[in-house]
Length: 118
Image (cartoon, rainbow, N blue to C red; front, side):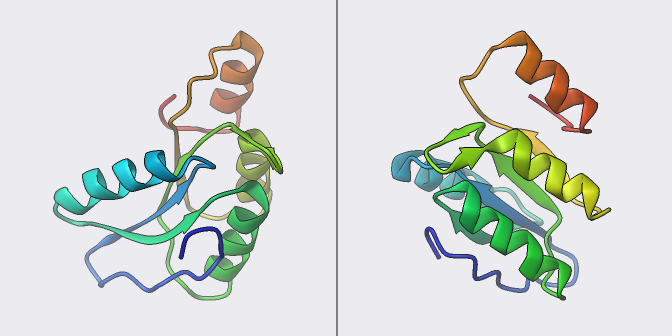
């Protein structure tokens, strides 16, 4: 599922997680960590912003997506744009920014968009 937008359906009592990061190793590390946490399941991984947008649209069409682990900087877009899209759609998806970006304006904007953790 790396890079594409195929979202699998998590179990009924499981939190479906989308990992969005352009670095393959970072996605692998996030996946390994999520797989160790009971009650969480990685339902998709995206290597860029465009694929993540497609995953969010797919989730809106019926696949369950509860949490996004979101990088801010990717070659094809910015994590803030994805966060804006999620909020504009009214999707009940939590977002945790996992990024090295420490720009104060990016942090403020992320928090204003309801990013749960930065």
